[in-house]
Image 1 (cartoon, rainbow, N blue to C red):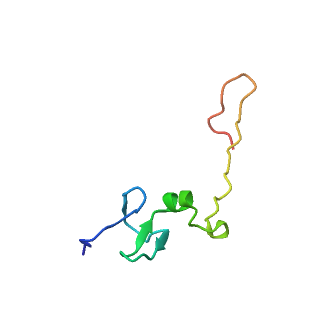
Image 2: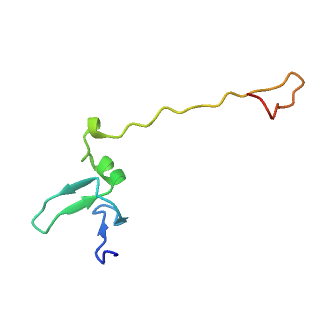
Length: 73
């Protein structure tokens, strides 16, 4: 069942399809912010930010004669 009411970001106006990153209660009603706009506006706590997983870099394998080994392990 689709929801006829879609929330939008108060800063940029983009549609929010999941829970907003930050909400502020105002007299006119709640203002919802997406994750990027909430970070720009300073509404997110630094300890609550999701941390990036460490990247796993692949090693570059080269054969002695200058051609790459396709079946290197």
